[in-house]
Structures are given as C-alpha cells and as structure tokens.
Image (cartoon, rainbow, N blue to C red):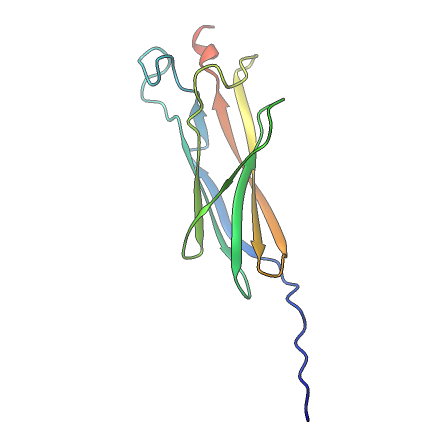
Length: 135
C-alpha cells in the first residue's frame, strides 16, 4: 500500500492590487449634504482589493480607526477575486476637528484562506472635517 501525504497549506493569500477611490473625502454636513460645506465633494470612498490564493480566499476585511475611537471592521464583498467595501460617509461632528482638519486614515485590508493563512495591505484615505469650512 502506498500512502500519500499532502503538506498543509502554508501559502497566504496574494494581493494583486488594492485601492481607495477617491482617496480624499469629506465629513457630512449638518444637515447631511447641504450646501453649507463644500458642495458636491465626495463623502464616501470605494475600497477594493484583488486577492487570490492557491486554494481559496475565505474572508477579506477592511479595518480603520479615527484617533481615540474603537476600531471599525467591515467584511468586504466578493465578486470573483475582487473584494469591495464602502468607507464613509461619516456623520456631522464624528470626524476629529482639530487643525489641520485633514485626517489621513489608514485602512488595513486583511485576507484569510481556509487554512488560516493571512496577508494584509493598507490604503490611506484622507477625511476632512467640516470644521475646516468654519475656519
């Protein structure tokens, strides 16, 4: 009798690319999306990552944190090997409003396969507080 032993999967998922479009958004106005603070500026960013694995990707998440706030983690939605999630919009007075009002937020994208192997990449989106309109 011949016994064949298969080595366990130790290969982490591979990121082909990751992006945030647009990479600069604004906090919502009060009332939301009024003409008070820059009209027609984007309030939301599309986060995406193309991720593959030698066996199968089982989960891709995006996590971020504003200074002092708890970490927010969302599960990204797959479409083939492209995973996507929305970043924002952020309600009025929830974005830190200290000078210089622009808050570069690092979003960590984590991918996991069925064997538990993990890989991660980051993208940065700048979120501007509406306090910048008040000068």
